[in-house]
Amino acid sequence: MSIKDVEDSLRFLKSCRRGHNRFKYKTELDVKFKNREEPAISQNLSLGGIFILTSDVNIKTGDPVELDLKNIPGVSKTRVNGEIRWFVPEGEKLGCGIKFKNLNEELMNAIVNLSNNEELREM
Image (tube, rainbow, N blue to C red):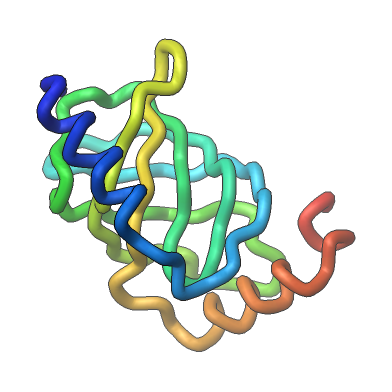
């Protein structure tokens, strides 16, 4: 990760406006970056995407990812494709903003339910 990559990510963050409200939601997930898969932890979630912490620092803005979300109440299939939109260092980890590419209806409804019900987020 170069200084230019971080600067580009910060510039993107300042310029964008979120289309969906995000809410805190910490859960484990698996992320597939190119040909490697690793565990990560979500920090927040919305219909548009997810913010995760990962130890993988060999990523770039625009890289495709495949997410296997865990512990989403009421959802059987939690695999979703995404794209890295921005990233920032978070201590020894890397924080990544990921835009969802293909939410199925079941997962979309589950995220709406989570956003509207704090009790579900604490399960």
